[in-house]
Amino acid sequence: MSSITTPDDEATDGADSVDVDATTGTDGDAATRTDDAYTFDDLSVVMGTYNEEEAIGTVLDDIERVTDGRAEVVCVDGSSDRTPEIAREHGATVIEQEPQGYGVAVREAVLTPDRPVVVTTDCDDTYPMDRLPDFLDAINDGADVVSGDRLYHGADAMPAFNRLGNQAFAALASLLMGERVHDTTTGMRAYRREVVQDIGWTENTGLSAELLIRPLMRGYDVREEPIEYAERLGETKLDPIEGGAAIAKSIVTVCLEERLRRF
Ligand SMILES: Nc1nc2c(ncn2[C@@H]2O[C@H](COP(=O)(O)OP(=O)(O)O)[C@@H](O)[C@H]2O)c(=O)[nH]1
Ligand SMILES: [Mg+2]
Image (cartoon, rainbow, N blue to C red; front, side):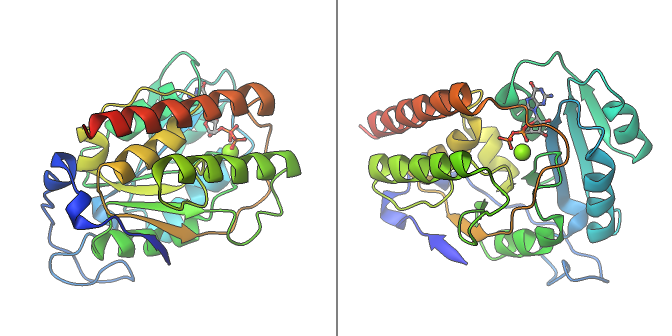
């Protein structure tokens, strides 16, 4: 795992408030480690879903298989197709919301669960749900945020324009933060619930970058974990030019806000 370790002496009040109330594990699978380690019973997998009927069955089947049906699934849905029906058939909690963009949906999704570990994903079969145990392990190892780095393995399935853009976003954020990050716009991350609850989120298309940058700049233990990235099922909901401009703006705004906050 590549690690962005923020020194403790840079930690601020936000990081100090991370107080892990670990629950007792049960026996049985790879995600069960010690008495006070989180297990799949402590995990919520959350996502925005917008007309993803081609992909949602596969994504939810994968989560069920990998977590033995123990992870809770929350979908914040703005679809006009059969996505929400398929989600409910799979036992997911579906929150209906008018489509207002990625970040509006994902903010609602990360704030909904009561469980102590929250994992985000896209509902498009691009992210490896098989890696959920590794993300949970990293949280149990002390990480506050575990961020899937798609670019580490090359992200061949990503359109070349998006890949270049994502590399540029990571370079820009690294420069502004003074810490090297490799993938700021990934959809797959694990968070301790306190992290998402304790920080105020402002961005929409740029929420993914914000969800990495604010915790990192507040001294939380943020780690990047290389992941494979697969070809999408169904159509993308993000316009690369308009969305890319919004993400760049979010990165600059959030980095400046976090720098000012330190004074
Ligand atoms: N509820 C909701 N979900 C959205 C909206 N926009 C995007 N999503 C979902 O957010 C995830 C990310 O979008 P995606 O099209 O995969 O973006 P990309 O990965 O950048 O191509 C997908 O699961 C989408 O269905 C929206 O306005 N409302
Ligand atoms: Mg996607």
